Length: 108
Length: 115
Image (cartoon, rainbow over all chains, first blue to last red; front, side, top):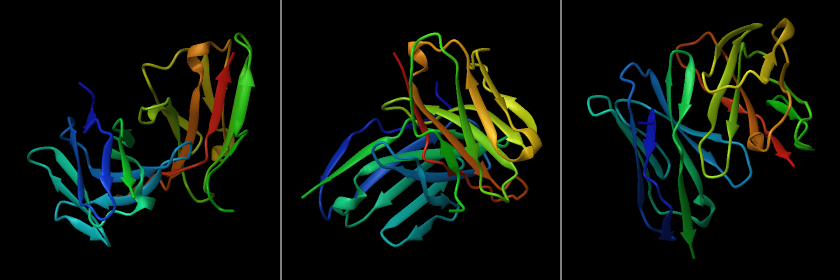
């Protein structure tokens, strides 16, 4: 079993749709969690940290459920520019462990 | 530019050759990481440094791979006797290394093609 698992994707959604990504992690000692965005042939870029209380940044909402070892990312009113791969990341033991990513295509 | 920089951006080599990549982290960052990424996969951890000390190395890492970070500044990743399976994007990243709120910042990567 991989340490961080994500929805396999790809997700193809129309502009304006709401889309949710799910992620699970296996190491209960994980300290912090993040969502990164990666465009094709580019490096991953930090989208947002994920806190237990849930946090929101504009159209993006991230949730963490430590009991279920589950993380989610919700994108509302999706834009063409949101098309990318979204990577779920768990941080523990000074290491950042990445999931395989979920690819999103927002269609006009 | 104060971000993480990597050199070269692209490297094409023949099987059996040695290659070396360089990474310059964000200047105030103590930790430096190397990852490898293949198409359709997330970044896979290779190794990391806290200042000049190499603290962890992936069990999956072949002994053909070696990394250094002399003086705790830039780092190099060398692959000896390259194989076609080494073709991938090699990503360097850095983080502060002393907070409880660590975040990782990546360079643009080095795309390696082994022919």
